[in-house]
Structure formats: C-alpha cells, structure tokens
Image (tube, rainbow, N blue to C red; front, side, top):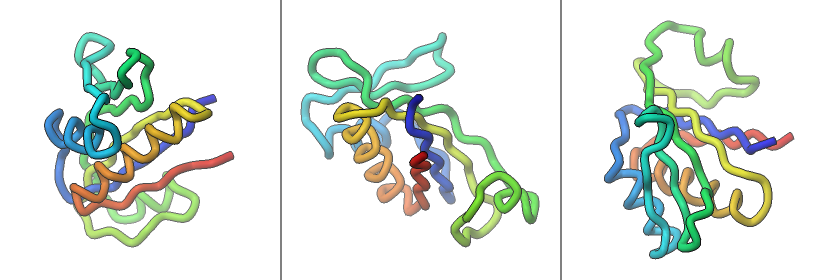
Amino acid sequence: MPREITILSPSVFDELDLASAARGVDESFGVREIDDGDALQVFDGTGDFVLTVYPAFELATEGEIDRLLPDPPAVRLPVFWIDAFAPLGDHGEAGVSVAMRLALGLEASCIIEDD
C-alpha cells in the first residue's frame, strides 16, 4: 500500500512548483505526466517513481475538512486539497520529502498518513 499524503494549500500548484520541490530534494529527480495528464509523477535518476501528485480541487464548505480528515489542521477557507501518494520504502521517504517541500513552498499544510 502506498503512503497517502494530503496537502491543504491556499493556492494551486503547478508543474514548476513540483519540479522545484523535487530538485530541492535531489537534483536527479524529474517530473512527468501520467494517466493522460491526470497526474504528475516525480521520478528518480533511474526512472523509478517516488511520488504521484493529483490536481488540486477547491474546498470551501465549512466542516468538509473535518469530515474528510481524522485530525485536520486549522486552515482558512477556501483551501485547495491536493492528493499525493508515495511508495513504501526508501523511494517513498524521498517522495514524502518532495511533498513536504512542495507544501512548504506553497505555505500549505502537509498531512502524511502512516498506518
């Protein structure tokens, strides 16, 4: 099972934001579109994926974040919800680092669900 990551951001991210976050973790990381452009994937120097990030969608309804997350951080509405997934293991740890750096660059909250 992959590690689920949720980013709650005051703004939408783009491919450049993700590429900058990825390169901030490791200069060999790149970004590619997958699923006919429905997601972006960060990959390492060998082509293995470390993180998959889906497009942001806006949440503006009071209480919606509380309903969706078990222990949500306090955020101002509207907020953009970004889903991401990292594999388990070392590649996943690198992916989590990229997600955290992306959130930092967006001044967003990053929730990593560990089972």
